[in-house]
Every structure is written in structure tokens, then in C-alpha cells.
Length: 497
Ligand code: GLU
Image (cartoon, rainbow, N blue to C red):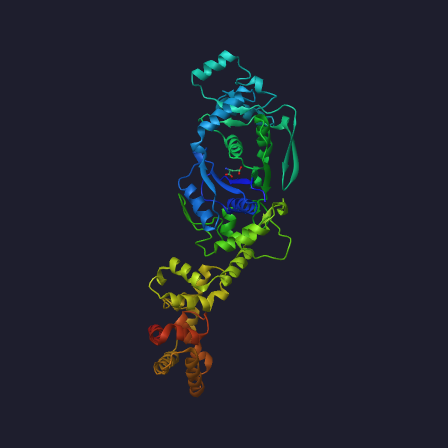
């Protein structure tokens, strides 16, 4: 066991946490837990323009929902400004970073004139002396600008001719020629550090041993490595997790892809400016199923085993067995996991979930909800599906299936329903077996034909030709409710005739 393992999950509070972010948190968590290490939560909120109210709370709630608990944090970068200030100062003093006073229009002009020539404007060693910064201006001019509070950014003085070699646990060695890199902004004109700077300073100050994050940050790795080197700090180990791709394997899984597939891409509901977005929770997924599914997006356990509890994941997860190529999001697999977990879950707990989510169940005895769960869960993939498979056991049909209603609408059906009601009324022990015996013998004697009785009866009780065994439904509803539903259908048909 290595007790010096310290990892962090470092989301930016710019909106709801995407499941890609949740997977990053999960992999960090599993890695920390299995090494007896520490999982730190750090909120990277230095970009004021992208800050969204409520996002931090959402992140914490989402982590809690899937059972990820941080040992440290949340730290907020906005509360650590003086640390970044001290560090940028030391980098400027050592000549590895510099003030740049170029205004936005001038830079834009350069960009446009380069574009017109089919080139890209890069601010770095090849032109920095021709631009307006503390390397091109003399000391007095720089002092004057600073005293006059002129706007500036601080840029990293990227090396002119160096091969930057970085190592990634998942991808091996990567190298980049520094002369191709631009002098990245480390400090913005609003007095806040950029992501790159705050991120590296914090990872160092927080003694982070392993940086595990999404592949989208891989292009930033050379800059981060250069910053560690510039400060003379030991680099942490890096692991960039593969992207979560849409089912076609073309591009990152987006909210639009989720909409097309009929699944969310966020763990919990998000109420934003554009309205409410449902999360996996509201769509009836169990957190254990989502976690299991996410763990296998990119990680290959190398065995046939697919069902992993959080404890199993902690035990078996292996960062060295994470693939470098993108992981396709397979909705059917997610549903399969959720179905499995629903079957494994205690009926009582599922009943609690349903009672919590559906107003209609608030006044119903829990025992009844548990029985309904027992009867229907085998066919459900999600809690919402489960509800639609059993709701008729609690709510009488309001609308009948149109086609079936049309088919059975006749005077003969009204008569059948009335006769059936009379039979039912005299059954003493209102249990499935008794009901079945009674009705079957009546159908046989009357010569009415099975379908002519059972179809309207099912339509009356369920509202459509679906549901569990009809005699079971009779017993579940009880005599009074069953009679009332049979009567309602016969009234409906009368109105139609
Ligand atoms: N704040 C970054 C994000 O939102 C963190 C990237 C990292 O983990 O270094 O993803």
C-alpha cells in the first residue's frame, strides 16, 4: 500500500457535471481508495465569465449520489488568489514569465493578417521581442506601465528549442518541440490566474501524486510539464482518460447525442436558464448501476466479470488497464446494468424509491408497493419503467387504449362485464386461485369464449391489453376496486354506443 497517493478531482463550476466528469471523479476515487490514498475535491473557479451559480452544489450532490466522498476539500481556487500571486511573481523574477501589455485589438490585428496569409499567429520566441512586453521594453517603460495600472497579462516564456518529454501512465511517452508552442497566458488582466497556472500551482502545493483527468487536457500537458520544470518542482504522474464517445464512435458524447438516444448525460437534474434537464437519477437509474457502467467505460478488467460493486471496483480497478482509445457510450449496456441492479436490489428499497418519486404512492401502504415491485420488476430496466409497468395497480385507467376500446365496444361486452361483476361479487375468498377457478368455470359454462371475457376485463382493470396475470390483478385491487373498474368500462362503452 502506498499511503502517499493523493489525487484530486478538479471540476470547473460552469454547469452540470457531465458523466465524463463523473467518470473522472470515479477513477480518481477508485485509485485513491485502493492505495489508501486521499481523494481531494478542488473547485477550479478562476474563470469568472464561465462561473455558474449552483454548479458547485450540483457537483457535490452528484458525487454524493454515486457514493464518492472526498477526504479533503472542497478547496476553491477563488479563495487562494494570494498563493497564485506569489508564485507568478517568483516566476517573473526568475525570468521565466513576463508581463505582456499588447491590447486585444493589436493581437486581433496580427491574428487576422496571419489568417489572410494562411498562417497562424503564435506569440512566442520568434516574435515576442517585436511585441509589447517586459522582454521587449526597457525596465523604466515597464515600471511606468505598471505604476500607471496599465492592463497586462503574464505570459510563460516558453523555451525556444527544447524537446519537452512528458510521460502518461496510459499513453506512455509523449514529446513536443517547444518552438511550436506559444507563450501561454498564466495570469489574466482581471488579476486571476488561468486554469493552467492555478492548476499546476495547486497540484504542487496540495502534494498531488497522480493527475488523473480527461483526454481533452492532453494538449495542455507539455505546458504543465514546462511549468513544473520552471519552478524546479517534481512532476506528478499523469493519466489522461479516454474520451467517452457517442455510440457511433464519432465525437465526444454530447447532450444532443443523449437526447437522440433518449438518455441523459448528467447524473442529476439541472435547472438552468434553458429549463430543466433530467439526470440519470430522475430517469430511474440506480447510482450503483451507473457507477458500474462508467467504470467499464475505458477500463478493461481483463476478465468476464461485469458486475462490480463499489468495493469490487476499489479492489479490481487498475489504472494500467485503462485504454487510450475512446470508449463508446452504449445505452443498451447501461440499461442492462440497471436491469441487473434492479433485480439485485431489495424490493423494499425499490418501493422507497418509488414512494419518494411518485406523489400517487404517498398515501399507499408500503407493503402494497413492495408487492407491486415484486410482480413487475423483472420486466423493468429503470425505476421509471417499473412505475409505468405497475402504476395501474394503484391508479384506475383514465383513458382506455383506443383501438382495443373500439374493438370491444358492443352491447354484448356490456352484458359480459355486468355478468362478470355479478360473479365476482359473490366470491368469498378474493384470492388469485379462487378468482381464477370461479371465472374459468363461469366462462366454460356460459360458452362466452375466453377472449370475449378476458379482453374487456383486462381493458377495464389496466386500460390496455398489458400487465401481469389478470387474476393476480383482481386480487391486488381487491373486490371493490375491481368491480368499480369493470363498471367504469361498461359505462364508457354505453356512452360510445
Ligand atoms: N478544471 C479542469 C476541468 O474542468 C480540470 C482539469 C484537470 O483535471 O486538470 O476539467
